Length: 246
Image (cartoon, rainbow, N blue to C red; front, side, top):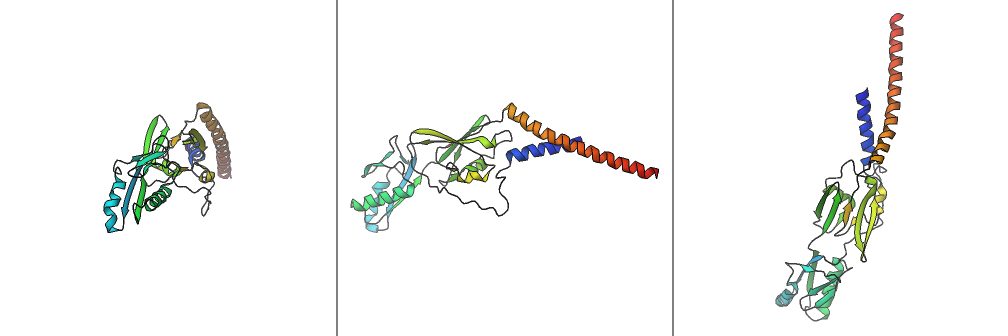
C-alpha cells in the first residue's frame, strides 16, 4: 500500500506541474489573435537573389546578387549595402516586404523590366539558457513557436518552473522579457508565443520552498488516501472475521 501511495504521489506531482495545455480537451479550438512574420533586425544575415525571366536581362540581373553567398549583413543602423542600389534601410521590414521594395526599385530605376527577387534569412537562431546549460536552435523555415522550440530542445526537466519560462527579445533598442506558461492554452495568444530570430528562452529551476510546498500538498492527499485505504481494509477484515464466526 505504501508503495502504491508513493507512486501515486510522484505521478500527481509530475502531472499537475509539467503537463502542457491542461485546460484543453478533445475538440478544443483556440483562435490565434497574433499572426506572425519575422521582421528584419540589425545583425541579421540575408540571402538576396535577383533573377529575371527576360533572357536579354540575365547579365544585367547578375550584379545585384553579388555577395549573396556570404549573405548581406544588416548593420547596427538596420541598413544593408546592395550592389548598384547602394545603402538601403531594411530593419523592420518582413522579407516579403523587402522583396516587393527591391522589385519596385529595380523597375523604377530602369535596371530591370521583369525582376524576380528572393529574400531569405541566412540565419534564424533561438538561444536557450537553463538547467545549467546553453543551446542554440537553428530554425530552418523562418518560423518557430514557443512550443516548437521547447520540442526542439527535447523538453525541459521536471524541476523547471513551467509557469515561469521567459522569452527575452530586443524591442526598439531595449531587452524585453515576458513569462509564458505552456500549461495553459492562454500561451497561444501571448505576443511572444511566435518567436523571432535571436530570441532567448530562459528557464528557472524550482527553489526548495516551492518543492516543499508541492511535497506538503501531495503528502496530505496521499496521507488521506492511505487512511481511507486502511479503513477499507479494516472493514473488509472485520467482515471476513465475522463471516468465519457465523
